[in-house]
Length: 79
Length: 415
Image (cartoon, rainbow over all chains, first blue to last red; front, side):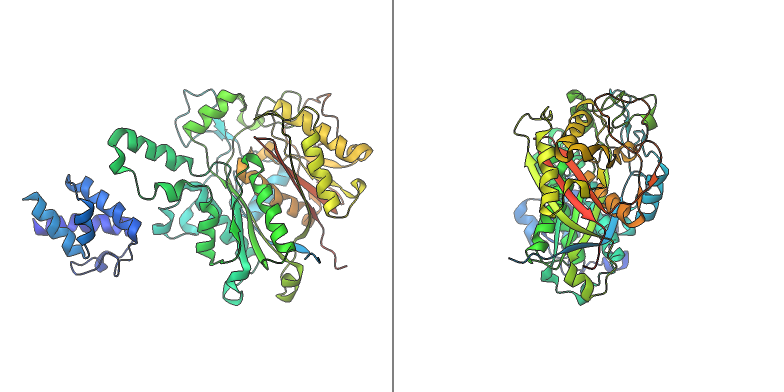
C-alpha cells in the first residue's frame, strides 16, 4: 500500500515537474529539491486530489513540504 | 533631440510555410500555399473548414518540457521564434547589459486555447479545478513576459494588443524605444495561435472568413476579384532590432534598416474599414515622412491584403491617396495569399518577409491572382516572385477597431 501510493505520487511529480524519477525520494522537498514554485504546488495538489479522489484543504496543503509528507497525508486520509 | 538609427540584425519565424527563416523565405518566393483542411479540431460542422496551420512544430526544440507545459501555444511560438532570432543575430546575452535589452511582443487574442479548455473545466468540474496556470497562460502579454524570462532581457518590456495590427505596432513601438535610446536591443514582433472552435465560430459569424472549403490552396486570393474572406493562420514573427551604434560595435550582420513608423485610427466602425481609405493612407504618409522620404522613394508595399472584399478595395484606395501617381509604379504584394492571416502575428512575420525582400532583392508574389478587380488596379506582383531593385519598403497592418500601422524598412547604407 505504502509503495503503491508513493509510486503514484512520484509519477505525477515526474510528469508535472519534469524531474528525474531518481530525485523523487520520500525525503525530497517539493520546492527546494524538486524545483516547484507556488503555482506548481497548487497544480500538484489538484492532481493528487484527482488521482486519489480526496480533497486537500489550503491549510493542509501549506503544511506539505516533502514527498513523504504528501504520501503519509494521502494514506492517512484514505484510512 | 538626436534620434538613434535602428537596424534589424536577426529574424525568427514559426509559420504555416516553414518553421525557420530559410524554409519560410524559399516557400514564400516559390508561391507555396500553407493552407489546408483544419486538423487541430473537428471542423466538420463548421462553415469554414480550412486554415493555415503551423506544421510539425516541436516546442521542445526551443523550450524545456516543464516550461513548455506552462505556455499556451502562442507563447511557445513567441519564445521559439525569439530564440531563433537571437541566435540569427549572433546576440550573446552574456556580453550584453541585460537592462539594455528589451522585448515588445504582442498577440491579438492571446491564450484562447487555454481559455476554452479551462472554461470547460469550470463548467464541468467547478471553480476549484481551474488550473493555477490558467491566467498566466492566457493573458496576451505573456509572450513578451516569457521571452524576457527565457532570454534574460531586463530592459523595456511591453506588448500591444491591436488585433491584426499588433505585430506592426509592436515593432514600431520598439523602434521608437531604440530611437530614444531607452534600450540598445529590442526583440519585437507578434505571435498568435487561434485555430480553435471558438475563434472559427466567431470569425465565421462575422462573415470574415473565406468559405472556399473545396479549394483550400486557392482560398486566400488578395486583390483577386473573387476573394471572399481571409483564411486564418497562426505562428510568430520576431525581429532583433538594435541601434546602429550597438550593431556596429558588436560587428553584427545588418539585414535592413527600419527608418519610419506611422499609426492612425479610422474612428469609423468596429470592423469595417473607412470607405475613404483615409486611415491607412495617413499611416503610410506618416511612415515615409518619419523617414524623411518622398512618395516616389518607396519601391514596394507589403500589403495588409487579407483577401476580404473590403480590405483590398480600400487599401488600394489608401495607397493611391498616400502615393498619388507613384501608386501605379510601386510593387505591392500580400504574403497572406500563402500564409493566411496570422492576426496579431501577421505584422511580425510580414516584417521578416519585408526585411528579406530588401536583403535578397526579390519580391514575393501575391498568389491566386486570376481575375482582375476593377477596384484593385495596381501592380500586385501576381503569382510569380519578381527580382527587382527594392531600396525602400513599407509594411502595412490594419486591425479591427480601426487601427492602422505602417513601418518603413530600407536597405542599410553606411551614410
